[in-house]
Length: 65
Image (cartoon, rainbow, N blue to C red):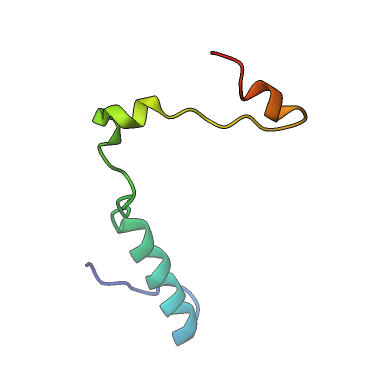
């Protein structure tokens, strides 16, 4: 990491720490999503349907389609 140089004004240690944290967070690589998986290949995953919701959902749950 390169050095920081204050060129104007007097920065407090807290302000310098906040600046370092802000710059470090922008340069950090984004975290990978741990829940991302290969479920699209699973045949059982394709058979599941979303349950109907709302008024008269019990009636539409028995309709084909």
